[in-house]
Amino acid sequence: MKIRGPLVTFNLVFTVLASFQGRMHLLYPLDKYVGGLIFFISVAAAVAIHGSYPKKHDSASDFPELMTEGPYALCRHPFYLSLMGVQVGMFLYMDSFLGLVAFLFTLPLWYLLILKEERDLLMHWGEKYEEYMRRTPMIIPKIWRS
Image (cartoon, rainbow, N blue to C red; front, side, top):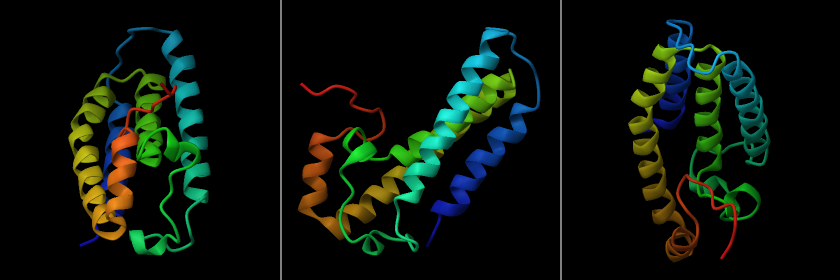
């Protein structure tokens, strides 16, 4: 069962729609600048990462090799991280309390999606993916190396 596309769409649309409701005024007007910056950097990252995928990329078998370089050297799911950044940027820019609540609501859904994808990747790549999991964090990027 393919849940990735519909779940990603739900997470993003839910947060965007919720972001148009309620105002926080927590960091105003700084939230506009910070939110806009996070939003545009995250969109650019998502587009760049998605552009590195093969044309058909519904399963791990569609990839000729395990992606471990570039953003994938920092964390195992940089595309999902960038989509979460889009959500954060949106609710900050829109200054929306409900957008924040929507993002927090969708975090467990992102996590469940990542766990499902990790199971699929382990089944396809096996020990190679296990080694990658040991050295690379799941979602919070490893900015520096020890």
